[in-house]
Length: 294
Image (cartoon, rainbow, N blue to C red; front, side, top):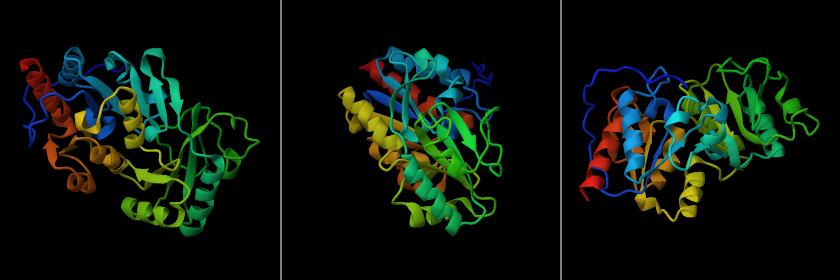
């Protein structure tokens, strides 16, 4: 577990709109939203998350991260212990070392169709395949937190039925371009391969994340909420990047971080402080205060 940061006890900017008095679930992205820039959780945020759970409000971490990168928040999941990972492709139990509870994979043949389309439309694109058991990538793919010991090979081999780990479901296909602007690459990819998967992005670089059709943070969160009898109107969501857009638009109340992507700022009506200013904690504190006030 990465230790919480030591930060001055200074208040974050006030949220631009009060949260509902009695939400039943808080859904929050991690990187650029709940986490500090050094990928830790501030003491204030740790306290706010615990207070929400004590007040009877469920908290779901909803992230593009794979389960193996969830150690930074695993100690701060109370109650159910569940988290939504890989942009909705997996629901995992952080109380049991990230054990998959549900997987919504990208079919290998659909992933191969994406690879073929992007190789033609955007020469220079390199790929990585995020499976339930780890990441595998092409030699040209840049080293974004790559796991040591991962198999390096062309994407066509990594997605072939005869691949050594073909029994592990594909959670995401990652596509990187060294020159294109991130949003332009996303628009191009959707235009040439959008029938094969759902495309989004969360990195400041031209790195796309491809899930199975219909798989997103929003669709998996909606399924988890339905199982609990929780409506969208009873959910407060936080995010900062395009991969959060569907979730923010689905939730009854949503907050864009001050540091959010322009599309996120345009799609949400509520604002809070930046991730470095404990913006999520500032809203949760208000929610808990109103909940306890009854």
